[in-house]
Length: 163
Image (tube, rainbow, N blue to C red; front, top):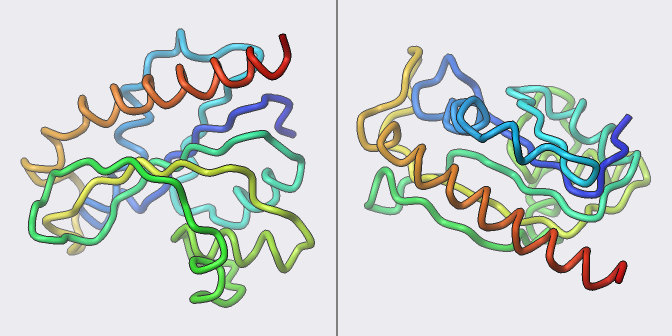
């Protein structure tokens, strides 16, 4: 059960090259970020597990994931998720692990997605195989800093709201 206010979720398949970006970043996020308001979880390909955990409630979700290549593999993007368009493009699928499938599953279960920030890295290679491409592996420290920055911002907002 999630009792924290902010869930940082690494998602992706470590057996599909750069799709393992989320789990790899989670391995490098400093454990000092954990606390009464933050939980870090490597969900891997367990999309339904994430959807069920979101049913327990949290104020914010930070998704760390590989994103499609837009011409700059290894580039890290930080953006707010658009739940409606993501969930609308995906049906309920207990085996899918993209954010759209997670939000569609959550909606089908009667839940509402929390405020969500995505930290994504453009992929170079998602063929079968373990290990990130050089471009994506080099982006891991940038993504870890992005997680730290996003958490700092979210925690500051929470402090203001609670104070």
